[in-house]
Image 1 (spheres, rainbow, N blue to C red):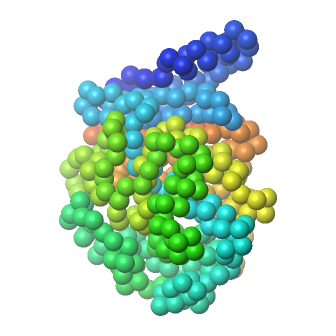
Image 2: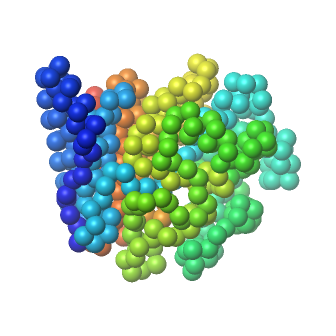
Image 3: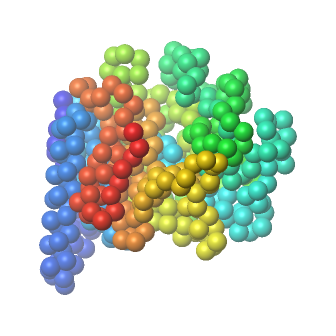
Amino acid sequence: MRSTRTRIGVGAALAILLAVALAHPAAAQRRSREAEQIIRITRQVMRENHLMAAIVRVQRGRRPVVTAALGNTMTNVPATPDMSWRIGSIAIPYMTTVMLQLRDEGKLSLNDTVSKWYPRYPNADKVTLKMLAHVTSGYPDFIQENPTFQAVLLSNPFRQFNQQELLRYAFAQPLICAPGQCFHYAHTNFIILGQILAKVTRQPVATFIRRRILGPLKLDRTASSQTAEMPPPVLHAFGFDRGPYEDTTGWSPSWSIGRGLILYGDIKDVATSAEPILGGRLLSRSSRRQLVAPFPTPGQPQQPFYYASGIIVIGNWRVQNPYINNYGGVQAYLPGKRLTIAVASTVGIDGNRTDENVSQVIFQRIAKRLAPSDPVAFPE
């Protein structure tokens, strides 16, 4: 059922590599060796974890080291690098970048409270935009630790949810802590932040993401879709959420992080956006620092692993690690080396029946090979 066939782009890319090899043969040989090692690492992780497919792209600056697709999207249908997949939380730093742009433009303050726009939400006069971005609001999630919602979702995974439904499920749960007093990952924060930014910009979320992020960065294969529809070719996802191994590609993504922020893309777009987004290139110097600044919570010393403004900071790495409807991904950037690693993966029939994101394992091993002085360790 699984294949380790590799599809690497040719044509123009081959011509570029040939020109580089003639001009700088030693550098070209080094990149070729790195590309082979990256593919070997990916294959090994795929075997160990029984993955159906894995797509990887590694860049140094804007120069690709390798773009490769291994395994199958469906039985006997090889995966290819240009396949669309659900990129999930990779969209969150797109939105927090817009929030910081609006701060730079003087249109909002990070200390503005939710009550300025939505006074009826719980703790609206105490929860700030900064808390929403750092998920320290104390708001509960509508899906995590919420068996009622999970049962509704799995009973009909094709159901379309609207944002107010999701917030009702969230706020039916007790608040986790007082605002700013703890970190608790909840999709609730991003739905509310999106609603607020839509009011500030007077544009739907999908519109301001397209105009401020996707357009300027020329992410032509990335777009918003509230339904499961994605442009072909499509990477298929599979999982065991309801017991049997089944294709989950067509499941609705509407339960996740808010209307307009539910994006699909391909591996090239994910890698292309890593440096400008995770590196803060679209922001002022002050907002660039704020993008990765920790939000201190009482009694918790700063850790090498923390959640910044929509970005996971692991040592010197900046990361997003989406997992939605059995699409596992990683977008990672190491500023000191201008190194980008992007990964997408799907589960095979003999794969792990948990929600483990095996793309993280691929990323960690590639990072260890390419940047051994900057180790990556996700918390247990």
